[in-house]
Length: 476
Image (cartoon, rainbow, N blue to C red):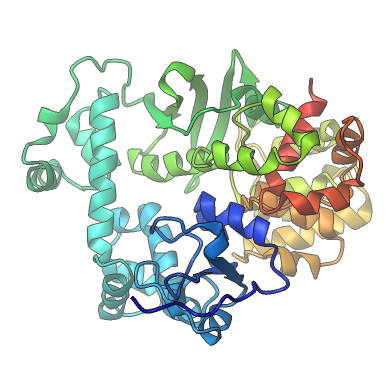
């Protein structure tokens, strides 16, 4: 066996302990932020590599793939670090694949053709198929077909919807295509996979179970939504979260409750078009943070004595997010230097001002609708009002400013940008500096000896979860 490179120190600006926690979590949100090299094999990988994790004493960490290569390591053939987010290849071809996957998950190939998808991406069909084959080993159509099959199978087993409705909801377009796909993949028609006991779902109200990794701090998540609930848009009662949504300009409703015995949340959907079901389900999984790994997060944060006691009190920590990045941005600007109660009151007034009729349930107002409201309908200081209008105009034009772009805008500071990163983009390491609630919660802990801003450096890469844990302690 060829010996690996001589022992190499990690890049100085990387904390090896933070990197160790991130690689063991295999969380895709850290992909491209650093690379790990294995001294015993001479190979360097992405933190999401599916290979068996190496022993820590054999690992070195690098900020850039080029640094690992310069140290004598070879790229892994399984995770292909040259295509990691942020790499030159990713900035070119892989970003196109990621955008395509996002659009496919949102039903782009259910509603349109491959040519339509390529037009939205600005690439040719042959080129997109080549990219998918190179990076995923399958075609765009095969990805969409597999997604349809899995979703249709879930609907068959958990609802009583007619097969014609299931075919429509899963994006097959016809029962014949649905039957053909099931016959080819499962060797039987859809009806053979149906569970006879299902009788609770109808076309008007569809119920699905969304699984999670236990434990799950349902009380904490529900308390978050309850404290931030916008009147007329969302509510919490009887241990159930309800919300009016707007999907492609059509109103719908979601209801979510906990099924602890099944380690799942039950989602009840009322949608005018079943074709919206697949992307809405994925959105709900995201806002309730159902794909987090609580064991890995807790194992990292409990090394802080002050947080360890809180983790024991509140197992199954999650970091919930808003329905959309646009909503999170509006909420963050409205919430500048005011209490949660005051912020939700303002958001409720915005929702009422843009509602279709007095006293009716409505969705959270779109940025375009907020941008044209009169001053009297925007109850906030003039500077904050100007900031809100300017950002809403950008969002209405289709812009998606990241943290760096937000900080460059007048009236946007580090706290606001961090809240958008946490509640909009779902970044696991976002941490709002000088948040009064966090400082109050931290100072109330007997084991807290360092100032919050110093202690929080030790919580990377899970500072968003630490923030949620501290806020959670204030509600008890």
